[in-house]
Amino acid sequence: MRLLQLALALFIPLFCFALWPAASTVPQASLYPLRFWLLLGLVFFGTLGAVALQGRGMTVTEYVRRHPPRLSLLGGLALLYAFWVSLSAAASPLPWIAWLGQPYSQFGALMLLLCLGGAALYARHAPVELVIRACALSTLAMFVLAAAEAVGWRPLAHLISSPRMTYPAVTVGLRQHLGGWFALMALAPAFFFRQRPRTLWFWLWLLPGLCGVALATNSAATLGVGLGLALWLLVGLLRKSWHLPLLATVGFAVSMLGLPPLITALNQALHLPAPQFKDYRSTQTLQTRLYLWQAAWRAAQARPLLGWGDETFSSEVYNYLNPQEISALLVLELGFDKGYHAEPAWPGFYLINPIKKDRRFVHVIYVHPHNVWVDELYAHGFVGAFLGLLIGIVFLRKVWQQESSALPPLLVAVLPYLVFLTAWFYVVTVTPLFFLLLGTALADVTRSRPEHPDERPPLQMT
Image (cartoon, rainbow, N blue to C red; front, side, top):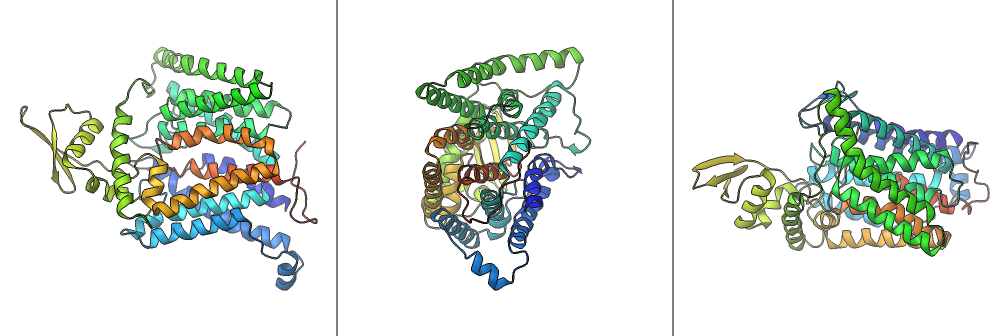
């Protein structure tokens, strides 16, 4: 069992930094397919290994007698949700895409099911102390590489080559998605160190996470971390332990204001390729998202039971917008002036300006509506969305039942990434880690109450 736990801990940095060198027009080709196989191997061999180690020296009959199948409410809901996701994919107008995802996104129903399987595996067997250290070192390494790329040194450019790379990106794929990765990691220490001494591992996890969000300059990630810090500070005030969250809030504000200008100054002094920081004052992406959310909501109402299947949004988005909305969406997306209007020209549109006598063909693909909550309604219907919401409620209830004081820090930890998902979507290089950390969090609050008296204690490092 200790070998399995060590493998689960080492899987975290392996998944974070794995890549397959591939010259492509999109960076995902070097990053996404390999992670699918890694996650598939984790769930399959991890589950097989756990059963084999638990049943060592037993016959099948003895194993079943000593470890009878038991299904909790949370596990039952997760299985029901997995069944519904599978049913949605099978009934989709585009089942192949719904199962495997689009080639440039690859987060279909199968990947979501693997995420659920990984969460279940970590909830049962995660070595919490080792996972904490693996996450801390991974966050530190990710920040160091991201800072190097932002300055202009691109140590991975010969391995991940694409004209569409937006730096810093490291092994996540795009600067925007890197913001989500750091949002996921930034406040996780608030939960995992709620009762542990705040050793060097705490600071190696917290500080690079917060600085990484500041470096990625993603509005949704920044807002999510800001709200998470506000909640942490509020909880600290109520518990009279506000000094640490206040220090973290001030540190995040300083890094957000000072880090991008510092990186830019270093970049210019060294005459290296410039980073691509976002202007927080821009509202263009929010305006385009409003049209996408509207289209997804209308499409969800058209198939309220099973939905359309994962990552099929690109085939339906324009069917649920009127011509004026399509014109406004494309003009905003491509930066044209308002004098242009769109006319269908399969597989895309002509943007036409009669005054300038300009006519341009455009083909813009939206794989997701850029809001995971609306995306859930679109992909899996209202039933699937309800099941997903119910799983979240039951998960929080279980944490509360096991350790009531752990619920506020857990909310602090997960809030940044949940806010990020309000403007983005599941990403192969980020979202599986979220599920694995949720499983680890559940293991952390239940570890003091083993389900079986003969269960061995988790592997620890001193």
